[in-house]
Amino acid sequence: MVNPAEIPTTRVSELPADDAVLLDVREADEWAAGHAPGAVHIPLGDLPASSDRLAELPDDRPVYVICRTGGRSAQAAAWLNAAGLVDAVNVAGGMKAWQTEGRPLETDHDAAEPEVL
Image 1 (cartoon, rainbow, N blue to C red):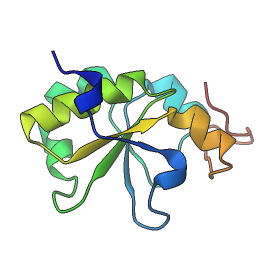
Image 2 (cartoon, rainbow, N blue to C red):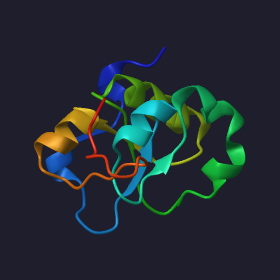
Image 3 (cartoon, rainbow, N blue to C red):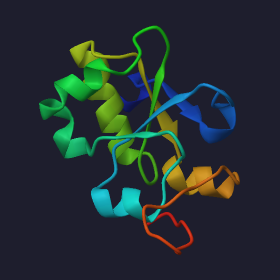
């Protein structure tokens, strides 16, 4: 069990503006409703079976892990770091904070406004 204080964490406002690698671990319906442009989507439950996709993530800079509010992403960041797969950082507040900060959102639904479920 990992102590939550040991999980690297940052706030949305502290994310690099240009080249942050964002890994969204929410479920498919949450992702489709609204997600960050350019984010990589691998649901939390699929991470252990997604070694090929995880290997495509950069290993020379942090991967910022995000979910709805920060709980699932903290679990994912702890697992990714323990497995030594990437330098994972949890995004506190998740996509709810992303939306509150006015960061861009896109949706997979035509003619729908993106939203965070």
